Image (cartoon, rainbow, N blue to C red; front, side, top):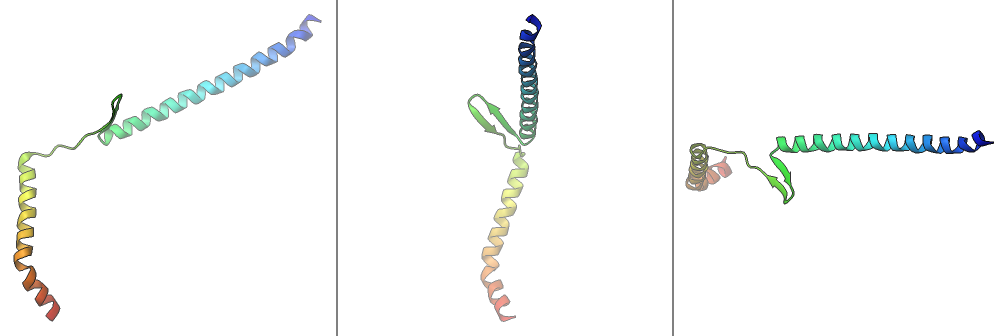
Length: 93
């Protein structure tokens, strides 16, 4: 009589243990996914802190920035100077 009363208790512990093991495996997998996601975002210069997300900007040297700005200014200037004449020539062709 004593052994037959223990069988449901053993089955209960086995089921609860199985569910706990599956839950633990899900927890490990979700933590791994979160780590992979954070690692990918860090590669893209996005960092999460307790204050929020910080987005980093790739640095550019002052000389390169000045060259790009000057090149854009010169192109705009030339387009403004030649824009009327080019528009008339393209319409007459």
